[in-house]
Image 1 (cartoon, rainbow, N blue to C red):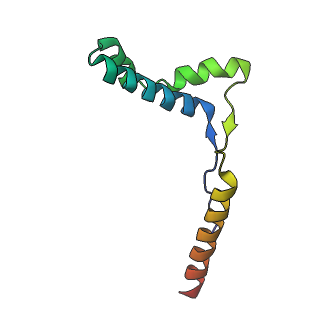
Image 2 (cartoon, one colour):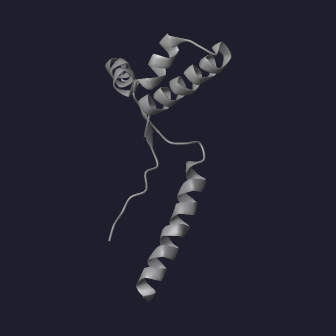
Image 3 (cartoon, rainbow, N blue to C red):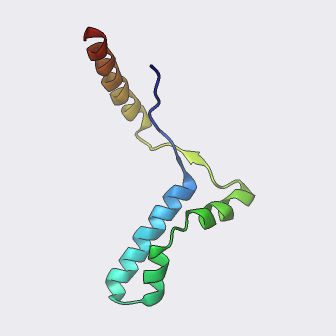
Length: 87
């Protein structure tokens, strides 16, 4: 059995989530703004990806602690495989 562990993310996903956090902060400070409420409810991923693609700015990125995450996942998968082979 083979399976993968996702270790990368598109920059459009990061921008979309950052935009959501930014809008929430503005909403909290403004207390009321219909435009921001409407913008927050929209999924802007497609528009962000479309804006990033022409300049090849939609990169696939890894977190800065990727080496540590890979080491941890290696240990977890090895333990799981060992347990599965015992039973």
